[in-house]
Length: 168
Image (spheres, rainbow, N blue to C red):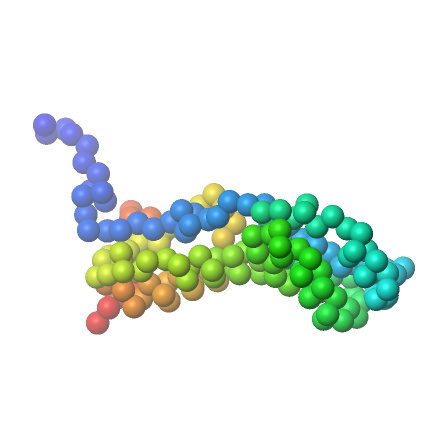
């Protein structure tokens, strides 16, 4: 058939990788210690401990949680640690940081589990546009790990990729 449309990308040696494929399900939430500050200014240990004892931490079941303090107050580090110790039994992951830091931490765990051998001596295109909010630093971390395996690394789409790395 002379007019048959052929997908040359599928028939090539290019391997397309989307970090969206690694994106884990689960709600991302923040716990704000500002709500535990006395008059929005200072942390009172006795009040925090009473709150911790009375609170239902199961609301964080299967969620990814970042712990922050959204106001300019001096909050001792142990307060973040105390809250984390209560959330951890329920959550998929708990960190001290905002949603971007949380996403980075979640992906750090994922990238440690990727079988990079599948990319051995391959021409790899890392797709950039996706449906999930993946921090730019995750793309950097992934490409650095990929360099030990891939023959070539490109970014973008097959029709308009940007060369990043070529094994010597």
